[in-house]
Image (cartoon, rainbow, N blue to C red; front, side):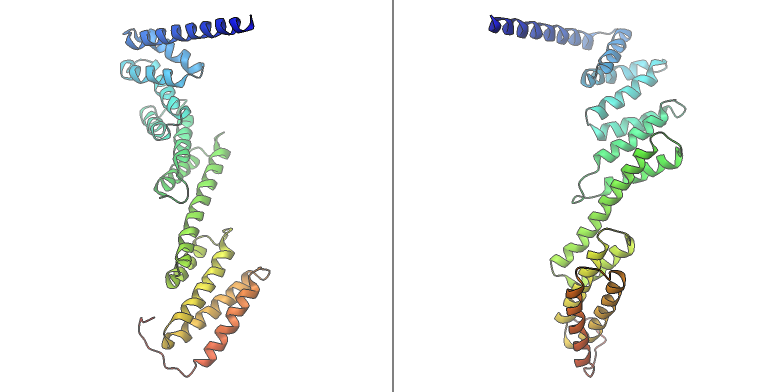
Length: 277
């Protein structure tokens, strides 16, 4: 008995679904703009963004000059956002703000344009061109709508993207160290700490810079070693002054002691004003 009821319920649901689908297919073929627009809004309000979006895309060129056009274009952009088509939603929200700059929906559209770009930002290990573009749009929004109800969320998005760029910069600099390209590592890590002095990676970057400088000096030809050990000592002094409680102090001290010993040993070795290693 229970099994037959389940079958009946499944058949009823299937019939209703087929009926709804048939009604939707008829709407797609219909030339009645008003009927299509009403149905699109109904689908949108129910959260059926696929059907709403399909109908609205067809309607937008047909609604030009009509008061419904503004709402249709905003809703269409948002159907893409709700379906996670962030590249498209960013494009259509930007198109909306350009077309309706005085609309009461323009602030929300500008926010959703920025949020679409934020959601489209790739992981830190990938190219960050889109992240930089998203940050520029986010900053424009914050400058334009200083008291916006979306300000807190927008600032949070900005901070998250900034952290992503920071992580990308650190990992890129660290890669030179991992590959034992010591000279490039020293330069890249110094640039990183200069650009992100308050970074959570700053201490690690400074220690890796010291390690890379020490290794570079050790691997250099004798005539270049002394000056590079001197640079290692200077980096060490900066490190212990900046991070007096660092867990890496002992390792840093070992490198410092050896660098000082090498500086004394090499004091009578003539230096060569060349770019040799």
